[in-house]
Image 1: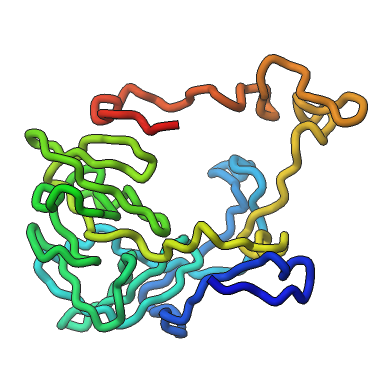
Image 2 (image 1 turned 30 degrees about the horizontal axis):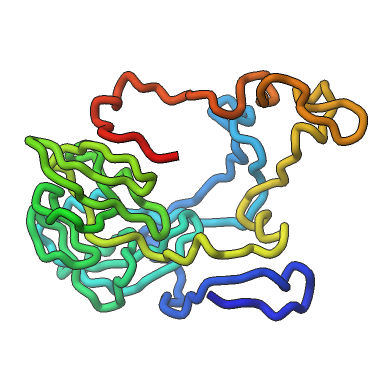
Length: 273
């Protein structure tokens, strides 16, 4: 982590990461796509997610989360920054010259060779079926269903752990501390996701939030009763009701909203609060 000199109030407490290990290059032209700004709007053009808008212009990097080229070794030719995610990405190339972007694990270096196979060496970046991974191994970019591509554990610094095997299922401890079952034919990558220091970054000023496309959030208690259930009153008033509410009058805190019908049977132990 690097600290700024206190040349202004915004710089005084701001920190940044050390990106010296990354390659200073433009993204691979064949592996990028234009990213249209939606500003938190849904298919009908209405705002479905508040506090989004603006931000720096970006190109979307096409990441291969599935890595379906089995038993084909690839070489890491560059480690790059991706503005669309918290983790770093690795540009890889196989013997035929085909290039792809992979999610980079912590400890992966330029020039390393990695492979995706049913069973292979325990090395950061290698990918195999979870039934062949020893108990206690850290994994990331895990498939939820066999052949579906990596869906779980993809954010910076995160990893899961193999806890045991029971019949056709493997017990996985998730980053949230939840213990759940996944089919043993699912693929997962060895190691932990890169950029573990991301959580310790202090932006230092409001402008850096705006670069990321995040707009200011106003407290409900600072609004009028017309705009929010918490609004109104003389001076700094409390919410004045039994429980906090959203701007649309729904319960805001403590209300369980998860649909438990589909995946409850795969959860062995819920996450600890």
